[in-house]
Length: 498
Ligand code: NAP
Ligand code: MG
Image (tube, rainbow, N blue to C red; front, side, top):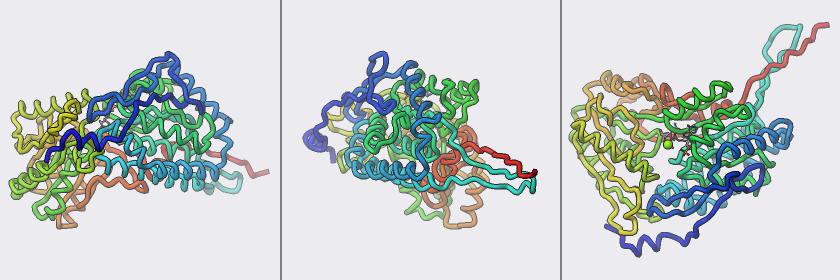
């Protein structure tokens, strides 16, 4: 059922345009140049906020503040217990402000509200989880004999620049800020230009809970200026980046002169493998959700579905039903299950791939609806699209589209499924559906990816880990591995012989 103008307006709370500052050295400030950039609501196309447009001079100020707080300054003097308490306080405030932050996330990113509420809740848990780690970063005493004592400690890596994408703005920020602070690092958070608002809100929370000045700095500005300057800056020790593989490569290259430590969480062209003996009642909604959730703007989304030949027609029919039932609309409307893409530029990229798929000779098996509401006519909506008759060499089978476009391929046996699954430069995630646990596990083990879900989808528990093989990244986030990414090992060698 199409929504009327009034319905959508009623679901849009009053929201006055906000002008944010950057949060640097414990204070709110303009960019040195005084320039500002606009932030759009992708559902309706209006400007909802402005933020400072930082440049090199702002990077120097932010790095200077983070350096001072780290090098014997305020944060270096906070002991692990107090670090832990501060992280717990951040978690509490995130929960207290959950509804407001989730609404802001919808306004700047477009996602359906239920997802945004989950993102804020999970961000709160991430801070809680790493609060626990702050008091448990223990070292080792290896047995080197009677003449000396060797003590291995884990030290914070230093000043960390945290560069995040726009698909899960607050969640990605939490995923980096919490372990960095737990480890004792100071940081500069550089959010994606399309979605800086909830990261700036994290700055507000840091201020409220009394994080020492310079410990968390939030700096807005474009990736090619502020991002690149952070990567090259000699005062930054570590880059933790989530984004495209292309920018990941640039970061490694440009960070090489200053030997930056890097953690890179990059793209994917992730396969879901569905065997004929799978429980299709569970598998079909799972494979659909894995590509249409957040409009496919999910690094772990499974954009290639590999289906055992004998069940291909029935699975395609069931996918079509799912797609037709999606409810495109404004993210704050409770009936919406499918929102807009994040930006006009991204809409053009995704629409371009849908054109390429047709030109390459793939069949459009089904395409979903656009919202009918006039109020959303300037929103960045695209039809969810499923291609069948896709051949492995087609661009829609190889390149990351990062939108609601599913490429369906078929296979005859497990060996062919694994070969197709691994026929990609990427290796972030994969999904295997089968009623035969032995076959499912063997297949999961053969797929080269950082996470493989067996009879489940898109789970990335904070207590576990997340990250990719091959061109999908270097290093891991979340869990203990996510903490270690902000630590250096150090050996103290203490002579004990006379
Ligand atoms: P992107 O263009 O790589 O941008 C990501 C972030 O990097 C943004 O903050 C961007 O700033 C900044 N940036 C851009 N160019 C830079 C440069 N030369 N130096 C330093 N920073 C730079 O990625 P995106 O298009 O926003 O996000 C989509 C991509 O992220 C997809 O490929 C997706 O798979 C990946 N992703 C991966 C994960 C994961 O966990 N593996 C999670 C989410 C997304 P601006 O916004 O100002 O350009
Ligand atoms: Mg980009």
